[in-house]
Image (cartoon, rainbow, N blue to C red; front, side, top):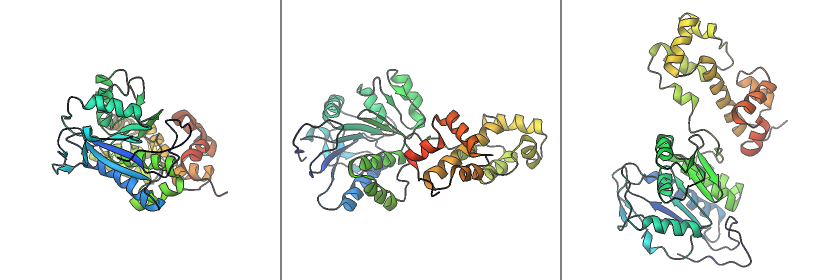
Amino acid sequence: MRKQVGSGRQGRDDPPRTQVAREVVIVAVPPVRALDVFGPSEVFADANRFHGGSPSYQVTVVSAVSERLVESYSATPLHTDQIFREVRGSVDTLLVAGSVGKMRYDADFLDWLRDQSAAARRFGSICTGALVLAKAGLLDGRRATTHWNWCEELARDYPKVKVDPTPIYVREGNCYTSAGVTAGIDLSLALVEQDLGRSIALQVAQMMVVFLRRPAGQSQFSATLNAQTSENHSLSDLIAWLPDNLEADLSIDGLAKRAAMSPRNFARLFRQEMGKTPGKHIEDLRLESARRQLESTSLSLAEVADACGLASAEILRRTFLRRMRVTPSQYRASFGRRPAH
């Protein structure tokens, strides 16, 4: 690995001031989820391509065991570049990829991980890699996340970690943890934007056909997708209809009529199937739609409110403040496009 060269004082969280490639180490802990390795690797590779000149990143995939050929969750072996003990020189960014099943790593791996994380400018995890960081004590006292399916395990087994099960990734100082699979791509894009600027990160996102900034605070949970888990056929058509008809009459009486039920029976069955009231679900859908439009369009707040079935921009503002703790304008300033008028 190439050693970084610089001059003057430099904080650990500051990007390198030289043109020497930033050393990115991605750790594969078997049985590794291959996309947790290759997703971030592709982001950094595309960043090199679009930035031009000397590579901005040197990516090394490292095995957490004594073999370079690592078992993957998909049963296709993954060839790593090095065994962790072979890593030499400074590491700029250290990421532990997720695995599924019983994780395997050598007895001295956690000591190595602690040492490398302490020396790196930044470190973090993708998906269940957070469990490895927690095992090493690297998340103690920190806010962190992982894939929603393992958040309960992370909180139970490592009570010193402040587990937040909602966001797709969390930054706490120079520690970054992300949710499952594609969230590793979101995190890597954020790191590229931090290092090389928005323009390069946007080109990478466009090449990969993903959003440049799916916000870190964006929920891992989609109201639309969660709704599709309903097993009640009398509600499934209605639930599928709702996201595209947020401007319609969505009162209890109106929805009950569409479902051919009495209002009382409809409200009872909906709550039984969905785990929440019709009003709460509709608000979730409207908020999800508003966030999507604030992130990806230049519609005015009044137009966003109207498209989501909300009576005014003021109601949109109050809903955001209550649910998101920021105003729509603040949300858009961080994650979206400015309105054209």
